[in-house]
Image (cartoon, rainbow, N blue to C red):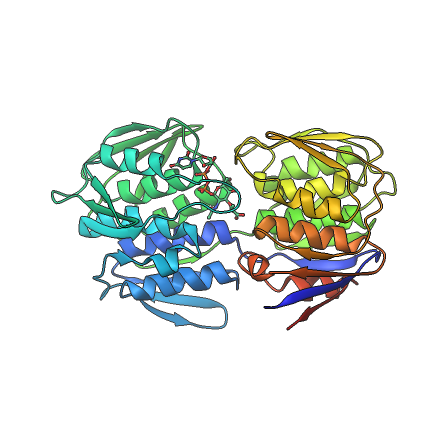
Length: 417
Ligand code: EPZ
């Protein structure tokens, strides 16, 4: 099992190129199932979850060619509608093939994704909404067995709760549903906007008719498309926090700054100096880190995927901070590991009291989920001495070449086999 060795207390200096977005690439890859034409996708991040999604598509019969700067997908021979447990268990976003398979073939057998360390992660909202389009479901041996023998039919759907994945599954399914579908109370994460742009590039008829409301008119077929996915805003936020926590001086580029306005505003409030240019953000971390109270929320609120990283930064603040995790029911797993490094974090339900003025001590650590694992690296970067982080397969799911990117800006970090 690979691990990371980090020697901390280095100020990070230099430039970091942000990769393509994992969470935009996954629904876009799933939605290619709708097409029988060639699709050229650029800027996909080289991370494990994308690898897994490509394997899942190939298991369904997709022909995938990987080139240096793009992948070419040809689904014209894709006929299978079975997404196996062995693939979906390692990457929950596998459930995103359910909508497109139903839309194109009128049936699907997809392993239900199950929970993960951050929560139960149910798919009830996905299934209830898809049944409004005429799909029928039964559960058997951990699989969702779906059918829509007469095809999907447009409907008016209101999501009872904002769900990124359910919004994505329904947008894709509605593209081939007969007639008009309206989706209200949609998630509006930038990754969803990227999915909409991609689907429109294939000729789908999708329109935002209100802030959280979409109108989709079903079509019968899509055209060939070339598309470059957006930047990874969570990777960008992670490196901004890395600069803030090490009093570093970092430029992150290949981004759209306005998409991470919430994060930039909070980091300025905490004391960092941030200059925004066209596709670049320049951050200089300050010695004094000012406490802040954070509550995670659907976009444009503070992203739950940056909560663990922000917790580490707030351990260095001048006073006590409060973090409220309002999206997932168990997303404080990183707190116990940070407390082993000297942090004083107290958890009560979905609230975390984060004491400031902490000097992290180096330690041997265990990663539990993708974003928790990167928070351990951030803490190790400011701990004087050698830390080891185990189970970094979590990290590799969503961060492209993280140790190379950090090494390039002065971190002493390497992967040990
Ligand atoms: C997406 O997960 C992201 N994953 C997550 O990123 C992200 O944390 C999350 O959205 C919230 O922004 C991908 O895009 C691949 P949700 P998703 O449906 O779609 C509940 C990462 O680190 N819910 O918006 O699964 C759910 O339990 C990952 O990259 C239901 O109750 O999130 C949660 O409490 C982690 N029933 C809340 O809604 C449902 O049917 C939000 O979940 C669906 C969701």
